[in-house]
Amino acid sequence: MIYGIDTLEYQDVLDIAKEPSKAKLNKKSREQIINSYQNVQKIVASDRTVYGINTGFGSLCDTKISEPETAQLQHNLIISHAVGVGKPVDKNISKIMIIAKIHALSKGFSGVSLEVIERLILMLEKDIIPVVPEQGSVGASGDLAPLAHLVLPLLGLGLVWENDKVIEAAKVLKKHQMKPLKLGPKEGLGLINGTQFILAHAITGLSKFEYLLDLADIAAAMSLEAYRGSASPFKKELHDIRPFDGSRKVAERMRHLLKDSDNLKSHEFCDRVQDPYSIRCVPQVHGASRNAFEHLKQLTNTELNSVTDNPIILSAEESISGGNFHGQLLALPLDYCALAAAELGNISDRRSYLLLEGKFGLPKLLTESSGLNSGMMIPQYTGAALVSENKTLCFPASADSIPTSLGQEDHVSMGSISGRKFNQILGNLENILAIELMFAAQGLEFRRPAVCSDIVEKNYAIIRSVVPKLENDRLIGEDILKIAELVRGRKLLVN
Figure: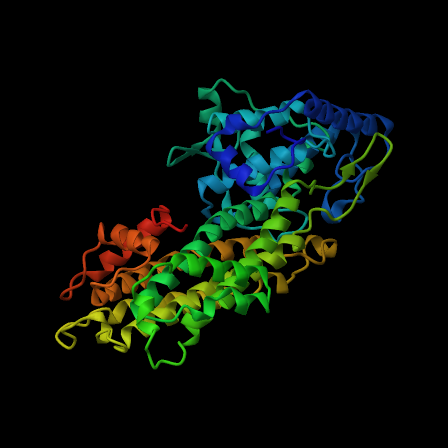
């Protein structure tokens, strides 16, 4: 993969994060970078006024900066904008930010030098990953504060990760015999103006969401087996006459996930007319969430291959001050996907509740000695709490805007908050699905000797490898944690 030249998809970024050597600069990308840098030098020499090159920033855009002061201007920009607060984002999110920033700068419209971009690549290869606080970006004018923290180590400032520890960047640079860089005109602005914080959260969330969408289908299939529900709502003919891509895909998966199940045969002579919605409407609900995922994936891939700083340097004669840094284009779909992820948890909790009711041959609370034992009663409380928490996180951050920079930046996206909330919801969803899988596995104990579909039986065996059948009350909270670890480690089969 070639930075600045190849069209990357979000999975490519995840691959590069695991193995940084997979992406390089080739001759063409170097030429693009050098040409853009030279255009900036020509602008400086011409004394033509261009925002961020020889002017102040934000509301100070009308303040002219002399040529000798342009380098100091860029240094001051970085140190003055590194004002993030809160916990550090995950190290891998910082790594994805670097990859996305390198790719955007390498397209040759930002005026950042080859030396600076090569230093970012070197940091990536040597695992010198900056510490980036999670709060401080309003998602327009780019993710200024997070990106300022991301590039502080270029100046020998800030903090970086060394394995799981946080240390001063200056010490790491000295260890690797790397001197701090001195930024030239436009370089500081090119580095911190952009949407890479929002984008990194979108990429991270998409990776989690893709697996959890598949796992939600598995959980639904296992719950249906335990409940002895009907597979009729998944018939192809039904979904061909309401042909949404997401629901058709889920219906097809459910048919596959339930293939050759003994439990489905119980409906041959049964008098149950139809199942509750949380069983019957899995294709429609899970499918709607899949549609949201596909939309976010499409827009994320577009953003990944875009130039999102300001101004854009087209040539030595033409630069454009525009709004490519504005995060609204990702903020809205991130908010939409947060709702889509929360709904997977919402319907999962309803299926968990069905399995506790004591109907159709299942004992109440999934224990044969309820009263003395609480059985699976209380884990559903935990699931309900997580579902409710996710609902509170669904308020769209992009619905808000607070003017900044003395009104010059009078509409902002808050997309950074959208991205963070999306990932919080996904973290809760992992635990919600773990609880449903625990209930479903327990429910299957009361359907033996009936044999489930092949993939359900394999997942049942994986769950039982870490959590035994519940006979009498025990520290069941530990069971949830063990199954949640299977979910986070992607140990459960989804295809």
